Image: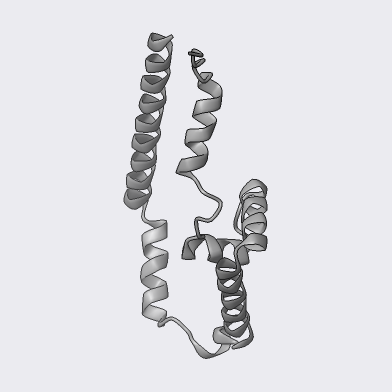
Length: 130
């Protein structure tokens, strides 16, 4: 009887990761819109391009989104649709309100503190495993 050698961790991890993300997964509507609008990072854009080459369904979604974007862009919405002056004034007041600015800054600091704490916890966890 031949003894089976254990699969090296790297290879088994790679195989497991391949199973978790399949190249046949479809793009979300948000990803399609971001791709069409040029809002993706270069790496993400490359992955979408590769996927769209191999996936006719997603390629069709990209074409549909591009067509919709062109219709909206060509419709001269800016000339036809205007926000009421009262709404614009209220939004300007909100943007210039010092109390609202302090609240936004406080919220951002709080989010940054939480993110830093999560990163520190993750690093501690990694070093403990060792």
